[in-house]
Length: 111
Length: 116
Image 1: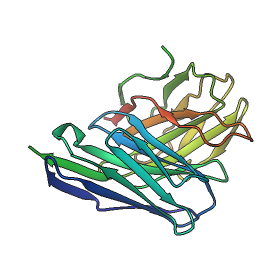
Image 2 (image 1 turned 60 degrees about the vertical axis):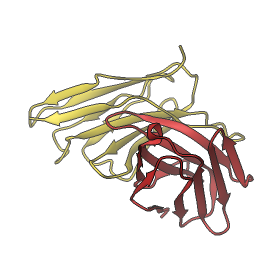
Image 3 (image 1 turned 45 degrees about the vertical axis):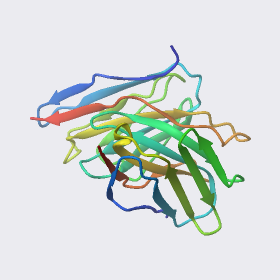
Image 4 (image 1 turned 30 degrees about the vertical axis):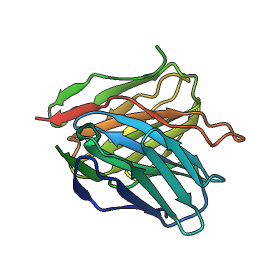
Protein backbone atom coordinates (compact mmCIF):
# COMPACT_ATOMS: atom_id res chain seq x y z
CA UNK A 1 0.00 0.00 0.00
CA UNK A 2 1.39 3.39 -1.00
CA UNK A 3 2.40 5.64 1.87
CA UNK A 4 3.45 9.25 1.45
CA UNK A 5 5.45 11.00 4.17
CA UNK A 6 6.29 14.67 4.44
CA UNK A 7 9.06 16.06 6.60
CA UNK A 8 9.08 18.33 8.50
CA UNK A 9 5.48 18.58 9.69
CA UNK A 10 5.98 22.28 10.42
CA UNK A 11 8.65 24.83 9.58
CA UNK A 12 9.26 28.48 10.47
CA UNK A 13 11.91 30.49 8.65
CA UNK A 14 12.76 34.20 8.37
CA UNK A 15 11.69 36.03 5.26
CA UNK A 16 14.20 35.89 2.43
CA UNK A 17 15.64 32.48 3.22
CA UNK A 18 15.67 29.58 0.81
CA UNK A 19 14.03 26.39 2.07
CA UNK A 20 13.42 22.77 1.16
CA UNK A 21 10.37 20.63 1.86
CA UNK A 22 10.66 16.87 1.63
CA UNK A 23 8.30 14.17 0.43
CA UNK A 24 8.91 10.41 0.31
CA UNK A 25 6.78 7.57 -1.00
CA UNK A 26 7.05 3.82 -0.56
CA UNK A 27 5.97 2.52 -3.99
CA UNK A 28 7.93 3.92 -6.92
CA UNK A 29 5.38 2.69 -9.51
CA UNK A 30 3.72 6.07 -9.93
CA UNK A 31 2.48 8.05 -12.91
CA UNK A 32 3.29 11.46 -11.49
CA UNK A 33 3.86 13.52 -8.35
CA UNK A 34 2.15 16.81 -7.67
CA UNK A 35 2.85 19.56 -5.12
CA UNK A 36 -0.07 21.61 -3.79
CA UNK A 37 -0.52 24.61 -1.57
CA UNK A 38 -3.44 24.91 0.87
CA UNK A 39 -4.40 28.08 2.72
CA UNK A 40 -6.46 27.71 5.93
CA UNK A 41 -10.03 26.64 5.24
CA UNK A 42 -9.49 26.58 1.49
CA UNK A 43 -9.12 24.04 -1.27
CA UNK A 44 -5.85 23.00 -2.88
CA UNK A 45 -3.93 24.98 -5.46
CA UNK A 46 -1.64 23.03 -7.76
CA UNK A 47 1.94 24.29 -7.76
CA UNK A 48 3.97 21.82 -9.81
CA UNK A 49 3.43 18.48 -11.51
CA UNK A 50 6.35 16.14 -12.23
CA UNK A 51 5.76 13.24 -14.57
CA UNK A 52 7.36 9.92 -13.66
CA UNK A 53 9.85 10.29 -16.52
CA UNK A 54 10.97 13.77 -15.40
CA UNK A 55 13.57 14.79 -12.82
CA UNK A 56 12.41 18.32 -12.02
CA UNK A 57 10.00 21.13 -12.75
CA UNK A 58 10.32 24.86 -12.14
CA UNK A 59 7.79 27.65 -11.74
CA UNK A 60 9.03 31.06 -10.65
CA UNK A 61 10.67 30.73 -7.23
CA UNK A 62 9.60 27.08 -6.93
CA UNK A 63 11.59 24.07 -8.04
CA UNK A 64 10.48 20.49 -7.50
CA UNK A 65 12.65 17.44 -8.03
CA UNK A 66 11.77 13.78 -8.32
CA UNK A 67 13.94 10.73 -7.72
CA UNK A 68 11.50 7.95 -8.45
CA UNK A 69 13.90 5.09 -7.78
CA UNK A 70 14.54 6.26 -4.24
CA UNK A 71 10.96 7.39 -3.68
CA UNK A 72 11.78 11.01 -2.93
CA UNK A 73 10.77 14.48 -4.00
CA UNK A 74 11.77 17.91 -2.78
CA UNK A 75 10.15 21.31 -3.15
CA UNK A 76 12.64 24.15 -3.10
CA UNK A 77 11.35 27.67 -2.40
CA UNK A 78 13.76 30.49 -3.11
CA UNK A 79 13.77 33.87 -1.39
CA UNK A 80 10.76 33.08 0.82
CA UNK A 81 8.07 35.71 1.39
CA UNK A 82 5.34 36.04 4.07
CA UNK A 83 2.77 35.22 1.36
CA UNK A 84 4.34 31.78 1.04
CA UNK A 85 2.97 30.85 4.47
CA UNK A 86 0.59 27.93 3.93
CA UNK A 87 0.45 24.15 4.14
CA UNK A 88 2.25 22.35 1.34
CA UNK A 89 1.05 18.91 0.31
CA UNK A 90 2.59 16.37 -2.02
CA UNK A 91 0.58 13.66 -3.74
CA UNK A 92 1.38 10.73 -6.03
CA UNK A 93 -0.82 9.23 -8.72
CA UNK A 94 -0.61 5.47 -8.33
CA UNK A 95 -0.90 2.85 -11.06
CA UNK A 96 -4.36 2.01 -9.66
CA UNK A 97 -5.39 5.63 -10.37
CA UNK A 98 -5.59 6.58 -6.72
CA UNK A 99 -4.08 9.94 -5.75
CA UNK A 100 -2.40 9.50 -2.36
CA UNK A 101 -1.42 12.46 -0.20
CA UNK A 102 1.09 13.13 2.52
CA UNK A 103 -0.03 14.94 5.67
CA UNK A 104 1.63 18.16 4.61
CA UNK A 105 4.19 20.64 5.89
CA UNK A 106 2.89 23.78 7.61
CA UNK A 107 5.15 26.62 6.55
CA UNK A 108 5.37 29.95 8.37
CA UNK A 109 7.52 32.73 6.96
CA UNK A 110 8.50 35.24 9.61
CA UNK A 111 8.41 38.89 8.43
CA UNK B 1 -14.78 30.04 -16.32
CA UNK B 2 -13.59 26.45 -16.30
CA UNK B 3 -13.30 24.85 -12.94
CA UNK B 4 -14.62 22.57 -10.26
CA UNK B 5 -17.40 23.76 -7.95
CA UNK B 6 -18.40 22.36 -4.60
CA UNK B 7 -21.57 23.32 -2.80
CA UNK B 8 -22.53 24.26 -0.23
CA UNK B 9 -19.45 25.77 1.41
CA UNK B 10 -20.78 25.08 4.91
CA UNK B 11 -23.26 22.38 5.85
CA UNK B 12 -24.82 21.44 9.16
CA UNK B 13 -26.46 18.10 9.76
CA UNK B 14 -28.30 16.55 12.63
CA UNK B 15 -27.17 13.16 13.81
CA UNK B 16 -28.96 10.35 12.02
CA UNK B 17 -29.58 12.31 8.82
CA UNK B 18 -28.11 11.67 5.40
CA UNK B 19 -26.65 14.64 3.53
CA UNK B 20 -25.42 15.05 -0.04
CA UNK B 21 -22.45 17.19 -1.06
CA UNK B 22 -22.33 18.49 -4.60
CA UNK B 23 -19.32 18.47 -6.93
CA UNK B 24 -19.56 19.75 -10.51
CA UNK B 25 -16.80 20.30 -13.08
CA UNK B 26 -16.84 21.83 -16.55
CA UNK B 27 -13.28 20.81 -17.42
CA UNK B 28 -14.37 17.75 -19.42
CA UNK B 29 -12.34 15.58 -17.03
CA UNK B 30 -12.97 11.86 -16.87
CA UNK B 31 -11.73 11.18 -13.35
CA UNK B 32 -13.25 12.60 -10.18
CA UNK B 33 -12.30 12.07 -6.55
CA UNK B 34 -13.66 12.72 -3.06
CA UNK B 35 -11.37 13.29 -0.09
CA UNK B 36 -11.89 13.93 3.58
CA UNK B 37 -9.54 16.17 5.57
CA UNK B 38 -9.45 16.31 9.38
CA UNK B 39 -7.57 18.96 11.38
CA UNK B 40 -3.82 18.53 11.11
CA UNK B 41 -4.24 15.60 8.75
CA UNK B 42 -3.63 15.01 5.11
CA UNK B 43 -6.33 14.06 2.63
CA UNK B 44 -7.84 10.59 2.78
CA UNK B 45 -9.52 9.12 -0.29
CA UNK B 46 -13.20 8.22 0.08
CA UNK B 47 -14.29 7.29 -3.46
CA UNK B 48 -13.03 7.86 -6.97
CA UNK B 49 -14.47 7.48 -10.45
CA UNK B 50 -12.50 7.08 -13.64
CA UNK B 51 -15.45 7.15 -16.01
CA UNK B 52 -19.20 7.73 -16.07
CA UNK B 53 -21.27 5.01 -14.39
CA UNK B 54 -18.24 3.54 -12.66
CA UNK B 55 -16.60 4.24 -9.31
CA UNK B 56 -14.30 2.56 -6.79
CA UNK B 57 -13.92 2.68 -3.04
CA UNK B 58 -11.00 4.53 -1.60
CA UNK B 59 -9.40 3.97 1.79
CA UNK B 60 -12.31 5.19 3.96
CA UNK B 61 -15.51 4.46 2.00
CA UNK B 62 -17.57 3.10 4.90
CA UNK B 63 -20.58 5.30 5.63
CA UNK B 64 -20.39 7.12 2.29
CA UNK B 65 -21.97 6.59 -1.11
CA UNK B 66 -21.50 8.18 -4.53
CA UNK B 67 -22.98 8.16 -8.01
CA UNK B 68 -21.54 9.12 -11.41
CA UNK B 69 -24.49 9.42 -13.77
CA UNK B 70 -23.00 12.37 -15.65
CA UNK B 71 -19.41 13.15 -16.57
CA UNK B 72 -19.53 16.57 -14.94
CA UNK B 73 -21.10 15.54 -11.62
CA UNK B 74 -19.94 13.34 -8.74
CA UNK B 75 -22.15 13.83 -5.65
CA UNK B 76 -21.15 12.38 -2.30
CA UNK B 77 -23.74 11.24 0.25
CA UNK B 78 -22.70 11.07 3.87
CA UNK B 79 -25.01 8.55 5.47
CA UNK B 80 -26.04 8.09 9.07
CA UNK B 81 -23.73 5.07 9.14
CA UNK B 82 -20.68 7.36 9.08
CA UNK B 83 -19.69 7.53 12.75
CA UNK B 84 -17.62 10.70 12.67
CA UNK B 85 -18.73 12.77 9.69
CA UNK B 86 -17.62 16.23 10.85
CA UNK B 87 -14.77 17.15 8.50
CA UNK B 88 -13.68 19.20 5.49
CA UNK B 89 -14.58 17.46 2.22
CA UNK B 90 -12.70 18.11 -0.99
CA UNK B 91 -13.54 17.08 -4.53
CA UNK B 92 -11.02 16.82 -7.36
CA UNK B 93 -10.95 16.00 -11.05
CA UNK B 94 -8.33 15.13 -13.65
CA UNK B 95 -7.90 13.87 -17.19
CA UNK B 96 -7.54 10.13 -17.02
CA UNK B 97 -7.11 8.59 -20.43
CA UNK B 98 -5.12 5.38 -20.45
CA UNK B 99 -2.40 7.02 -22.51
CA UNK B 100 -2.31 10.23 -20.51
CA UNK B 101 -1.44 10.12 -16.85
CA UNK B 102 0.65 13.26 -16.72
CA UNK B 103 -1.95 15.93 -16.07
CA UNK B 104 -2.75 17.89 -12.97
CA UNK B 105 -5.56 17.20 -10.56
CA UNK B 106 -7.73 20.23 -9.85
CA UNK B 107 -9.57 20.78 -6.58
CA UNK B 108 -12.74 22.52 -5.51
CA UNK B 109 -12.86 24.90 -2.55
CA UNK B 110 -14.31 22.31 -0.22
CA UNK B 111 -17.41 21.79 1.91
CA UNK B 112 -17.14 21.95 5.68
CA UNK B 113 -19.64 19.54 7.21
CA UNK B 114 -20.58 19.83 10.87
CA UNK B 115 -22.82 17.37 12.68
CA UNK B 116 -24.86 19.03 15.40
